[in-house]
Amino acid sequence: MAVQHVPADLPERIQHFIDGEFVDSLDGATFEVLEPVSNQPYLEASSGKRADIDRAVSAARKAFDEGPWPGMLPRERARVLNRIADIVETRNERLAELETFDTGLPITQALGQAKRAAENFRFFADLIVAQADDTYKVPGKQVNYVNRKPKGVAGLITPWNTPFMLESWKLAPALASGCTVVLKPAEFTPLSAGLWPDIFREAGVPDGVFNIVNGLGEDAGDALVKHTDVQLISFTGESDTGKLIFANAAPTLKGLSMELGGKSPAVVFADADLDAAIDSTVFGVFSLNGERCTAGSRILVERPVYDEFVRRYVERAENVRVGDPHDPATEVGALVHPEHHEKVVGYIELGKTEAKLAAGGGRPQGLESGNYVQPTVFVDVPPTARIFQEEIFGPVVAITPFDTDEEALELANGVKYGLAAYVWTSDLERAHNLGQRVEAGMVWLNSHNVRDLRTPFGGVKASGLGHEGGYRSLDFYSDQQAVHISL
Ligand code: NAD
Image (cartoon, rainbow, N blue to C red):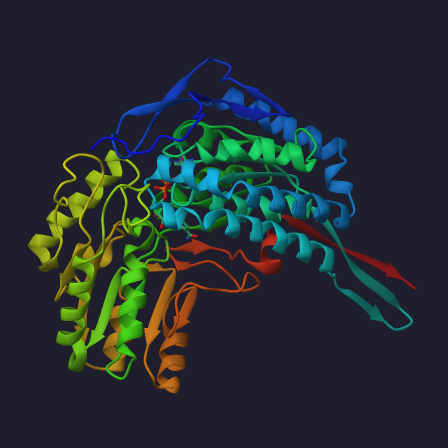
């Protein structure tokens, strides 16, 4: 399929941004970036190696040691963060256009990303000003207090799904805390990260505080993880990559925050508001092209409503509109990259041998090229099936019946992941009982995916280590020194 919309002024080259300057890799290396509708390369990005990471880390280190960023009053840093938020919001249309072009995300869904990114900066600006630390007094003997300090240079490694927004979720608390940063964006989608340097300059972020090194995970990402002068790594990506990073960070004993993969269950009981449950579970796996970490990609349905749920769900899935990502009518666009498309199609073919295909299962008609797949529904999926167990990260859902609350819990917990869970029932007691026993970092009862930024965000089991969100994020980027004095 031909590309319908090419953003104006698209760069042909993306460079690193180090110490306030755009620079090439020291060895001049680049990699090609593809656009997911035509799968043609449209951009050369600088391919960072160890030497480029060294350069960026030393700029970040210098900015940390010589200031002013880490020593600024929280109120002053908050002003800069609020300016960043204001500028991000003015780039909403441009960001959405670039994000849709680079990732294949439907334009209507890309349009919300700037607002969410701006909100992340505003939220951490507020939080850093309101930050209070503990003081303890032993009457007549001692005073003890916490001296909070930024940790140093933060390495931020991010994935390709909603890249700009996910970068903001790490940049905002790292910068609010007074750290300096080196960001390594995902190599499939480096385009929107190219907006940050101008935004930060305009907002008054000093040179060296924010640095980007583009490149492959095994080169630039690996060098950042192993660098002796990087105090912590905040990583979002696949669980297997997380394991490798965990091992590679061990020799330098870094702080690690890991937001990893998921295979989240949506449990629908017979007493649920079925209309709401169907709306939510359709959205839960088909929005953002199904390339969503918290996707409810397994739906467990109580037997008495199973047939009705399946019939209505399949009808909805068949009506989800797949098409050009820039078309406002499109609900599922093109998957990010041919490699990822091949992976998702591979799971669909596997699913046909493991369960019953009820909708989709191939390439949508009229979209003969590009990374398109039909919204796909498998039903009667046994819990032993790989499509039940493994993260597919596309518009593919597995539906399985259950008979009792205990069986629902067993099925929900019977995978290695534990990121999110969704429960649909009109019985409040049952909702809380199941919700509290399900192995998931985040649970939504009769609701989906909207959350207050003060709540913990993160997974358990193979879905992650540590929590972000609210003060947890600020704690991750800070050292809390205990100071004691005798009276
Ligand atoms: P990925 O693990 O392939 O890559 C993520 C980032 O890690 C990229 O920037 C990549 O270059 C880098 N990387 C790869 N190998 C590395 C190495 N050896 N050392 C250092 N860095 C390395 O993940 P992806 O395919 O880009 O993203 C999709 C995954 O992210 C899915 O599993 C999804 O569930 C997960 N995700 C999780 C959350 C969450 O909050 N839990 C949010 C979004 C995405």
